[in-house]
View (cartoon, rainbow, N blue to C red):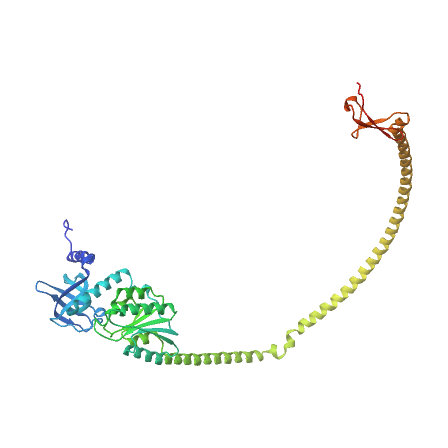
Amino acid sequence: MMNKAVSVTALVRYIKGKLENDAGIQGVLVEGEISNFSAYRSGHWYFSMKDSGAQIRCVMFSSSNKRVSFMPKDGDKIIVRGDINVYEGRGELQMLVTAMKPAGIGKLFLEFEALKKRLEEEGLFDESHKKAIPAFPMRIALVTGKNTAARSDVLSTLAKRWPAASVTEYPVLVQGDQSAEQIRKALLSADNEGFDVILLVRGGGSIEDLWSFNDEQLARTIYALSTPVVTGVGHETDFTIADFVADLRAPTPTGAAVRSTPDISEIEERISQYRHRMVRSIGRKIDDAENQLNMIRKKPVFCKPERLYSQQEMHLRSISETFLRHMNQNVSSVRQELYDYQNRMIRSCQASARSESMRCEKNRISLMHILDQKKNDMRKQVQSAAGLLDAYSPLKILERGYSITECAGKPVTSWHQVKINDTVEIRLHEGRLQAAVTKTEE
């Protein structure tokens, strides 16, 4: 930017951009004294913060200052949290204040703001994570102090607004060292029981009294619950970490009961209106249907319905007569054709039967002749084979004085098949002999 002249607007915007991108002066905590405080009709606050060495102009818009629990004035010692930027119209450095507390409780306020900033950066306050509150919760868990005004207010409000709901109480300590842990355990127990919504409430008090609801572990527990949580802690101007992480924040315990339930009288009135509208709507539909039915009844087609089918009846009768006439003609013709076919088929079958009978008789005679020839030829062959078989039969040889010698069931045809002293069997024409070998000779 040093090599070229720029406009004042461009220079101021450049400085503003640099400041807004500096994380070290965004969400910064500043302590000082108020001067020149002005509360405008729009609800915005304009003032300066100063100390012995410097001052800075500040603005706190109505969306932020409505959470401040006191009305500031000149000379008050305060601690604020905000972002440093530049007001372009006058080129002045200013601080956009988002939170304010009296300096007298500076330590707790600093801890509160530091935890709030850290959890906000982690996304625990994101609207996208917040769960919807059921329109008609039937099971409600109430986590609050035992026998406290906040408990009584919530129960009486629920009994008037939504008596249909079942309320289960989880009494806990709502201040003191052990209170945050008791509240956390009660919330976890209620979350496991499947309630439609959990009410976490406490009456008003100082920042020290409400400090249990600024516990980091309690905030993370609320964030992780699967059941929607509605908080009503303190008065309308009191804000706790639990309020920021809850799914819905109410300004008071009674407000928590109101915002988490419908008004049964309104529901009854709405149902009554729906009933009347439904009855009127059904009545109109019935009237329209009756009018339409009456109009239909008056139409000629319903007064004399025979007109609908008289022409068709005549046409059908004519077609029926024509059809029967043609059918009779066709039946007679078909009957004569069938009679002719029957006679022709009988004559043809008789002629074929005679022809087949003569052919079968010729084949029978021819077959018998062939069989006789085959039988004579086979008889001659059998006689010839029997003669040869008889001629070559070993029995014929045995009749001429020959014998068959066997050793160990095998015929002996050579001298070297037996040894001296072997027993052999000799088969004769009549009978058998057993002999011992005393000598072999080649």
